[in-house]
Image 1 (cartoon, rainbow, N blue to C red):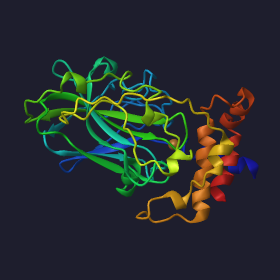
Image 2 (spheres, rainbow, N blue to C red):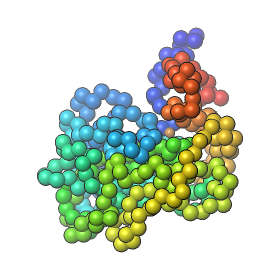
Image 3 (tube, protein in one colour):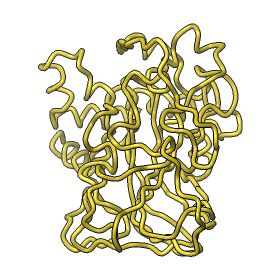
Image 4 (tube, rainbow, N blue to C red):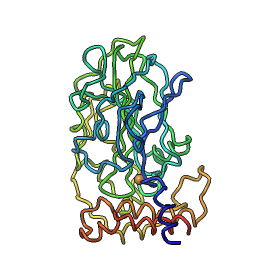
Length: 328
Ligand SMILES: [Cu+2]
């Protein structure tokens, strides 16, 4: 019986509480993305390959540009996208992290294609962002909550003013329910046609890694602090928006290294009471399940866990625990 359970559990998706962009849509055309848990052989998509649903946990990680490994695939495609048109990214459903910003970037490739171009060599500019939309840091409605409400998708308009050419488009959601912040970036190759003549300005251009610092206020935000109960300002990380003309950089203020213990995190009432009222509420039971799954997965990358305990969590036998969590 136990082995049957183990078999059933082994067939579950490897990571239930994380994910990434699985497909795109532009002008009525749907583009399937890379399937990170399938064999790379024969996969052909506009998306840059990536290998895991797990988040990136450091702003300085070399894979922060286009995820791991983010290099173009053997059968890499490029979508033709009109300047001024909408492009939508779809995450796995239901995206589990309603606290944190949504961000979209473009980077122009030199030459006639992005295929073969290392994303870390490019200069990126931000064309869309959504942080704390309403309410407080601790209990507000965030860009990522809106993304969930929109069928776990995010639509960004490719600016009509962007010069025509070959670009990587980088959709990103950052989850703040635990610290360190969790980065979920994926990239796709597009060729923008019918563009304009406004190149991004120097202060709008950044590199990945480089655009963020692990001490950025928007990446060290503690949702469970006392201040978070009343704070309504959230500083979205990264450069000023393309075309915003603000010349503003989000300069870090007094960085405070956050130490999050499971006890502190689990003492927070994470489930349905914190979801935006517009969302259909999960039952308390489902919410608790979701909460504990998060807790379990968020432990994986935690430095404070002794190695022995981490290996227990990473051990396949703990899959049985996951199944129990799913069933309760
Ligand atoms: Cu997750």
